[in-house]
Image (cartoon, rainbow, N blue to C red):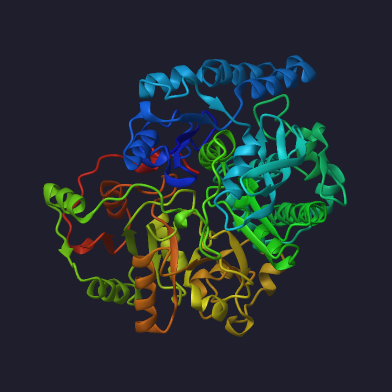
Length: 615
């Protein structure tokens, strides 16, 4: 008998909802895409409504509603932490207890108020946090059996979980528990380097190639006791998150010779080297843990989830190490993916649904294009109502020729086509696109389009059949979660003498071409790769293929369609507003082309730089 399950994640960060029917993913979306508040932690009422509409189901017909976390177990951790630390933890306890007692334990009330029902089960089911991560990684993967590795900040008590999935069952073999956490260690360094916790970790990863791992040994000597099997314990006296409201304390600062960098201040050589150092330590922990997991399980495949699994550099090192034959990473690896994992684990374990067969290496994630779509009629109705000029080109080949030609001329394109991506990466549905051959693309897109730090790299979307022509990688990378080197024959020499001598000026390096596709090549000659197939995203594949016909280059620069601090766009309205706030040249909304130079001046008194919190 068919079973339909709603999964929910909420009340920490990146709230989301997902619907699964008989093991098939029907829809999933983050609340931020609807509310326009980045990492929105509130109850995901808009995301839930979308999922119900996509599934053509009333809330009362849901067989189960499942929350991604066990609130009682999480409160137990908060309470025990306060009892251990004592009065110093009072402010932290008051805040955490307010969140737990004010929101999380009243799940039935939240759901009943939002949906008017608790579904057929009559109560919200709860799953363990790391089990939902494991489920989100294993069940959509293309593997019948696999080792499972989940790492994040903390969920209830667990921070790292090692497990195995076989058929429709998952077994957790061992765990590392709070306060010992690789995710919190990385977040502590994120905070110390002046970036925002639970948001700026990817900046730290992007900054790492500019530095040297000079502080790696200090981290290992002072902050973490790392064992040969990848297990670890933090030296908690150096951290502020146990008894305070910040990640680090004076002992942490003393290890590295001073206070944290002030947010938005100049980035110095010290931050570059710290980023390189924590990245090196993270990679070593991931590799040691993976070797241990391979030995313990004997599995040839590994799947990953949890916030640490978004560290695509570490993922790339894991893939290159050949510890496992195959690797699959949940594209919504953070807390948003917990909603999907909660729904899947209810389907497969609670209702004992078998996993459906799949074709070859194809996964069950549907290219993660499982969010809302707006068809041509909706797009044209919006543009006509607003009086915005546009050109409708219904012939696919003609439209792709026009857009590819614009990119080849150096123009920057906003692309809102098809179902929105689930997860933090733009995968060719809500993307800003450019020419990877142009050495100015990175600086133009960072400074004039994204309004963000100039060092931030961009990713290539490459035709799957051209992947190995550009990159030294042993597998496809459909979700932009693997970093690999650009092929040596494509690399260009760089003058690094002054920079390596201690010059803090990153622009001297950023502006140097590093390969024949300079806009996507990082300073260490690596790139964060997305491979595109004709099956995964037909319109996007067709565009890249047409660009290749015109230029000989089988890839595009792809970055998320948003400005700094803004969630990725969802609707045509979001797309047009973002388009007009930047210096993009062309907006593609399904089969409608909107040229910037033809648009009326936008009457927008809102200061979006204040509307969106800096990430």
